Image (cartoon, rainbow, N blue to C red; front, side, top):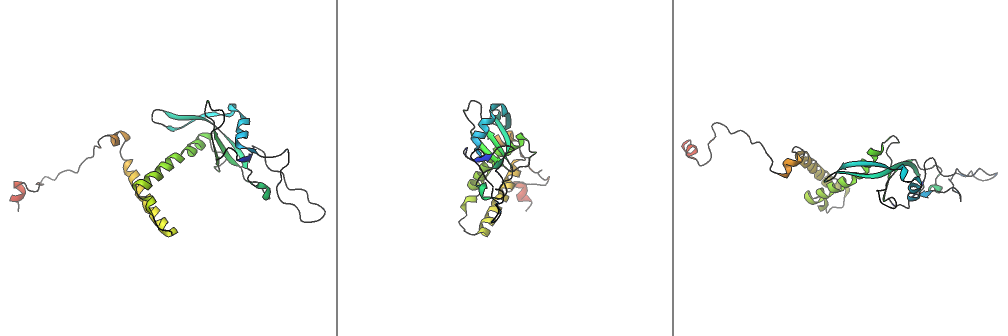
Length: 208
């Protein structure tokens, strides 16, 4: 999301419609005024200051956990709400402001429930990288991007088969620990029957 996206801060919202006049239809559209206007998400978070930030770690990296400083507040989107009779519903504004950065660097809007915790918001926001990696694997390894059809039914069938195949591969991969996958997999073979004779051996030829 762009830092210039405009929202109403916590507890704020557009002005109600003008009072009804003596004649004409009653006004219904929401209003703004010179002193009552939405602000950009960058202005809002900078106004909160660094004291509102919390350090959160969301997953393990290559050598350590991945932490940063973030803040989440409830806001109302202000996009063209002056054409509406009711304000937009409240959403979560999640912002990342790393230590040493002059201003916030990333912003997310989320419709998760109001009682969602900050660590859960961060986990789901950062999950996009895992989703993109999964899409890349499906396109490169399973042919998700090879479809040349133009119908919804064709795409739906093709995507469903690719996702099912990917789910099978992930389930098979999860059977082994990362250390085992990095080296040789110690796969247990089926027991050899007592009467087994290798093909071409003297015992096998004698049995013919």
